[in-house]
Length: 88
Image (tube, rainbow, N blue to C red; front, side, top):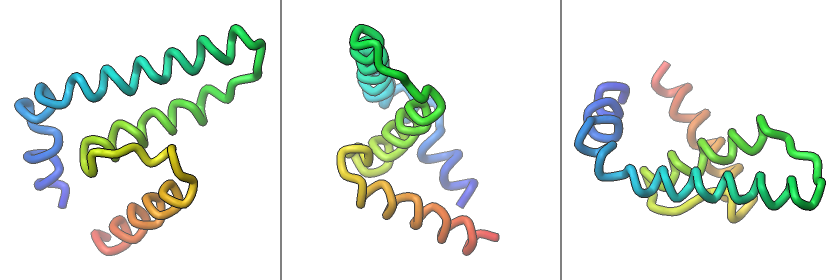
């Protein structure tokens, strides 16, 4: 599993191809911070960074973000946990 992720998902060529995707998600994150800052809302930066990371990873793997639907977020987390348990 680790070898497959390293070669397929995190290989140099793949990362270069997915750079625009990472830039889009980072821009979305920065706009969210700006919007909340202008509205003087409290921001849980750790939670927002976790969402950013999840969105980037799920878009790289499945071509969609998981933060748009709370049930998707829970499904993804369960799938990651189950995979980690199977992998040992």
